[in-house]
Length: 99
Image (cartoon, rainbow, N blue to C red):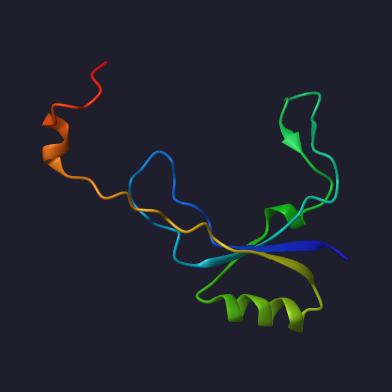
């Protein structure tokens, strides 16, 4: 039985946007070791489940799908974004550390 992960992906480090972070994703753990193919050098694995990524609007839908298909799964809760309050005037404080 393959182990599945249910998670909400983090935002891309290359962008400040939050696209593709609203939906829940069900993806399978790799069951076999990845290895380089000798002729072309491509990385491949013997199982094809690691290519499957299912998206769901809610966590409940993803869990219901996993239960319906008798999948062993683990839910990874998303990290909460912590917003640090900032003020533009803080850039000009006299006690600011200058470097």
